[in-house]
Length: 158
Image (cartoon, rainbow, N blue to C red):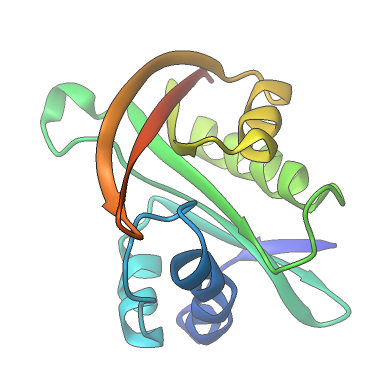
């Protein structure tokens, strides 16, 4: 897999990868899949946005965003990774995250945080394998598919 910086031209592919997470799962607590235009704005606003390509096709992406707008939080970022359906447990998520961690560290960030709707053993396992530790649980903070959902927070020093 080749990993590179995302461009605005990647917005369609990223939106397509993300849509099933929104439509069919509680992995994302968004209720409507974002359009390519919305995804392009997210790419522009990210600290880092990387895409993974295999045989010329985008198969996943990872990004780092603002943890909190207040200046005191400027050294901490949030991170996420999404893979196309059927690509879990192939090493793609790990490769994207490792590249992302390197990039945000180079930018001067000292801590990365990830919010994970639980249960999601695959995501929790990936984060733990990459050195993230459990730091908290927000019980029943997200409402989707007629049910409340917990969000676990994990953190890693960079």
